[in-house]
Image (cartoon, rainbow, N blue to C red):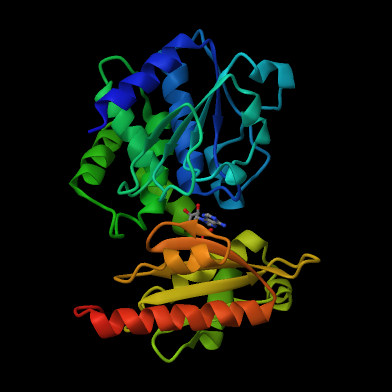
Length: 328
Ligand code: AMP
């Protein structure tokens, strides 16, 4: 699928001596795995090229994947090719220096919010951006080189963005691509330990989430996590945000969301929206957000607007339940 665009991208990579990789703000396993994975594949294949991955945004839980490159002078970007992975809109690109690159490629699996870049390879049905990178490797495996390090990066994103191969977007292709990565020697026991073991104190926080979670009339489960709660459990914003998954297995709650107070002057609240069966992205898009059909993010200002989003989500779920069968 999409062979022409993949070939175009490989040709562009060959054309440039210098390549910068970019990803989205608030990085996650997928954008980190995809950028580090592609960087490693390109370094192994084209040792004479300079490949940079520069990003100040850090996610603590991914530190085991190792550090990024040190910043370079702006002038370095101007004769380079930029590749932005896993980022639907320019606004969400973490390292803003991408604008300096001579040409830009977008590789993504989000519902497109806007077009940017000279070449775009977007497959929104893919379960992760890493799956696209694995597909890129698989397509040109006679030319590209990979090792267990690169495969581990790519596999990390495939696992995390698909909820360990659980979400709707997982297909036979996902598994075939994952298999190719596993064949390169991924230490899954170590990887899963890094990804899924939780601190004792964090489990106590989860227990509190179960105590405080609420549900709307038509089945939207939710939790408000204000600054006080974050302080009480000594959590970073990222750690607090990770709790949305705790609400994912309530029978009848086909949408669930976490509201995390950012603690800034604008009283902004990060919203993480998740769903099964019903698509939740229309609600995210109404509140300055977007993402995937069943996993989106948004921002609201103040608890009143949070309540308003909840009312909209509840009406959306009500309508879905009234017009569909087979949901659980
Ligand atoms: P999150 O809950 O932040 O993990 O977001 C779920 C998905 O929605 C991710 O793929 C994000 O890239 C995307 N997303 C989150 N926030 C936004 C936003 N404000 N605008 C567009 N997409 C978003």
